[in-house]
Amino acid sequence: MKRTASAHWEGDLKTGKGNISSQSTVLNNTQYSFKTRFEDGIGTNPEELLAAAHAGCFTMAVSATLVQKGIVPTSLDTIATLTLEGLDVTGIHLSIKGKVPGITAAQFEEVTKGAEKNCIISKALKVAISSDAELL
View 1 (spheres, one colour):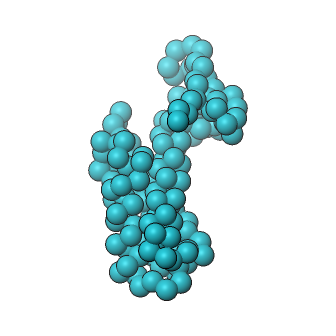
View 2 (tube, rainbow, N blue to C red; view 1 turned 45 degrees about the vertical axis):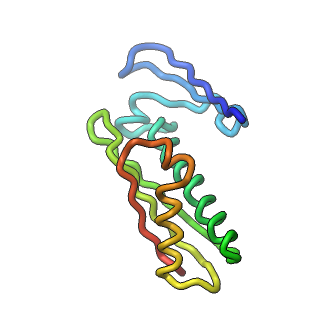
């Protein structure tokens, strides 16, 4: 399986602008710029997209592990917080809340720690990754 995305850019770094598109067309000429990346503007940025991808991947990995244990979650909600220091991504923190019947908080945390290390996006990254879990 291969997934594709594309980016188009015009101009210099600070005043230029571009757009990002994805194979699925969920992103379709979505605007991004220096302002949306490093300041406050309307549009997206690569770090936000990386955080979204990590949140989605991690949440699916938690669900898959729970189902392997015979436990079906009612709901799982994750916030991924990516830290950018200068021009370096220095870490991502994954905060998950789950409604999961038939499991203890300790068991839920054990599952989330496994997903933190083993989801596809976590394995692709070379930065510190941490997480916390709250069973609702």
